[in-house]
Amino acid sequence: MDTGRVAKSARTVVISGVPDGVLKDDVMSDILVIHFQKSKNNGGDVEDIIYPTMEKGVAYVTFEDQEVVESVLKKNEHRLEDRRLSRYYPLKVTPYCKNVFSSVTSVLNMSVFKDQYVLEDLIQELKKKNTALSFGPLQSNGHISVQGSFPAIKMLRDCLLLKAKSLSEDKNEERKSHQRQKKQQQQCRLTTDTNNFVHDTEGEKQVVVLDTDIYLYMKNVLPKKLLANTDVVISDITDGDITTLYLQKVRSRPHAAQVLAFKEEIERQSLKLHNTLCKERIYLEEYTRDEKQKYKLMCETLKSHYPSVLVIPYATHIDVIGNSSEVFEFTREVNKEVQSLFQHR
Image (cartoon, rainbow, N blue to C red; front, side):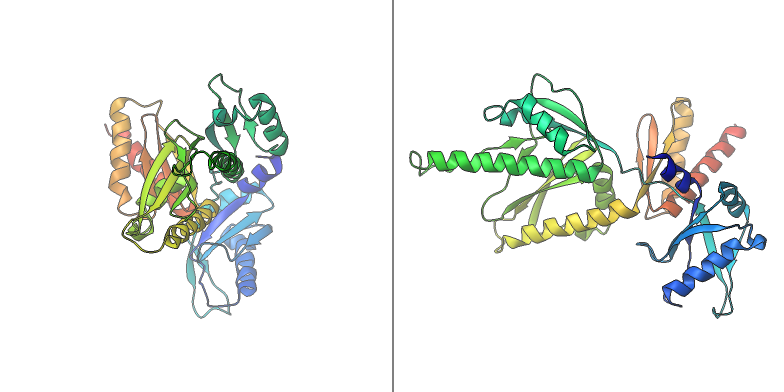
């Protein structure tokens, strides 16, 4: 992340509890600016405000001075009051959590192209066209590691899948005159040896590439109906930061277009979550086995109070995923409770 953006994120707070639909958005923005510029609210000069946002009742306020952020956060209660409001509204102010879904790593298997391209030349071509991505060395088995933003990696993968599909179709045309009775289909492996690209002409099979954390959030937090479509069979393969979903029409169902519609809905939800979710990581390396267990148990205990937060425990850390304000409140409460336990042991 560039220096300017880091500086701005450090000077930004998240405001929750903004009354929605009470006044026009521009009027509400003015009221929020006035509130956070007042000295009685520990405020200061406001550089920028974002309202409305994709989260209902949430605004982002950026101050000119980072010290104002610390001051505003120290105030026990923020009450939004104005003559244009019929009553006061309590606000929750939390630090801005930067979105951590900006960098993922994927391993691509380029060996499928070795009969049509010199792989080293193909990789150089991809590097020129995808300057925002970082490519590792090409391995002898055709695998190459790629790191960058999820949308950029997804675009690269989609491009390669189409290229592989085109090669497959060309081969099928060549063989049709010799083997008309046998259906030809080339399987393209881009992530692992079992990660096969499948797509048929009837639209009965579709592939969706997702950020793994976003997929886990969709699977475990969003309404079950999103990934529980009775007309579509879903299989998934996770390769680190990337998860690939394979969607296939249930044979007894009549319309293959349902699969495509389901794919588009998943992609729409994924994009929305990509723009709104953030992740905090609780590091556990320095703790004993008993202390790590206490952290994980405390997360499980508090989870019921934060239904929109996903907690993923690992051996060395715990990932907490959700909207910025709830993630901050959850991790702060976990750290507070566990540290209290440590002090009284």
